[in-house]
Amino acid sequence: MRLLIMGAPGAGKGTQATALAGRYGVPAISTGDIFRDHIKRQTPLGVKVKELIDAGEYVPDEVTEDIVASRLAEPDCADGFLLDGFPRTMHQVHFLDKHLAEKGQQIDAVVSLVVEPEVLVERLLERANIEGRADDNEDTIRRRMEVYAGQTAPLLFHYEKQGVLVDVEGTGTVDEVRERMLSAVEARGEQDFPFSTED
Image 1 (spheres, one colour):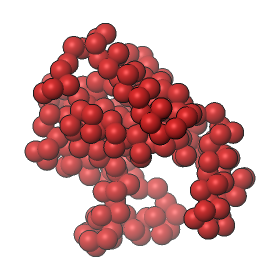
Image 2 (cartoon, rainbow, N blue to C red):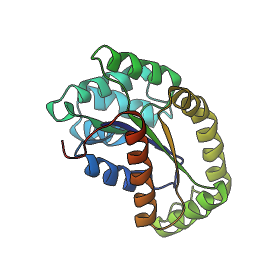
Image 3 (cartoon, rainbow, N blue to C red):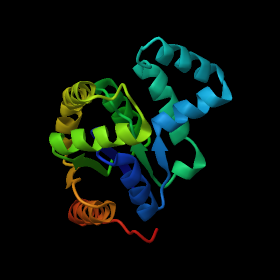
């Protein structure tokens, strides 16, 4: 299974990514974790990424794409993977499509966790309060939501056209959302590309 998971800040993507990857026995790959690892180990890439982040700049698509391609080439990705945090731009989407096509592969399902914006704002304000993040006020949170929605709309449309988008209602307990998500992915799998979860 080659999977992507997408969701706005506060949608519970990280938690559900682990459950989904575990269900299919594939590695959950978070680009954010990869970046943090490189920064911590002070690799040449980590130094470069830290400079960009410290300057408030985005990491260029090409740098992120190189990192992902390198990670997908590792042996544990031979039978599939779950990407969390990639792709984030149409440039990255086209890169991933091309990269997989060259290996005769494709994305099997793209899980989009859908949560009402007001619920997300409440969750993030609560998290900011618990973690003492003074800079996470309602205005900045709403702005992040707008940016996320604007950036991801073309990506979701692209995957919807490919017939691989699976919308999952992300409101409820962690267990409820997980069950809903696994059922939706399995239903899509049985419909279009029979696969065995035992492999």
